[in-house]
Length: 358
Image 1 (cartoon, rainbow, N blue to C red):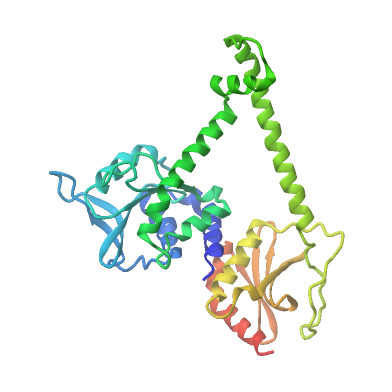
Image 2 (tube, helix red, strand yellow):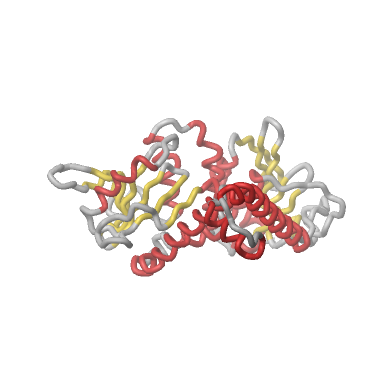
């Protein structure tokens, strides 16, 4: 399956469900276990993904961590879970105690949205206070998807991850320092900048306080300039969305541009696209699957041909539908959430097979 698409689909799942999840147990079953399934682990096999793993601490026996991921019958990652509604800071010490009692080299603390990855860089067999990697799935960046892929069952390499952990940890700390300085420039930073030929007289505390908001405004301006350039570059490199469509289901038409279109592809439509790719990835190269966004519907298509559409997604104000051709007739099914598309996997496979036979 396509990892990036599955992760992005899972992010949409979190957005859909997060307000309805009230307990730690619901967080585990609705968000955390599906996440580790995406990473390739069999969450229903206790020899691979063991729940309630015993991690005795000192004289206290029977202490348990929520999950232990095992490879070659040895725990390699401990996972401590908290409710989606809880912040993680106060739980670090609990996982810290568990870490030193097992052979696992990595530990993950999560509430289903934020995943913190720990190891023992500072002192062997003693979990670091700070994670070497922290990922908030609701603020996911593309480069973080690549980092997550290192933790999949297929790609997991304990030594390689450990070797890169120190650099990741230092990078995270440096980013936080820079972020803090941008938000609230320190006296030291303001003094350093003034010393670069900006202010050549004595830099008293009054001078520093006067220039602090000026430095902050300069940071804000630079960031806005960088964002504007990125947006301009993105628009310049974006090809127009194809939207010309022929009504005939037999005509072999290549997608063409529709000039002057005001169509905006939504997050829900992209989620549907990635779900369909994930479903069909076992049967074809997913690069054959693309999409064409229309004013009235969102078509997921095969081989860049609008007449070879796998399904159409209709998103109205109060209703959502998925349309699939069955026996030559378009059938619409009502869905509550975009993730319900998984329930039509068999019909999508049948549609793919019928199109591939043409």
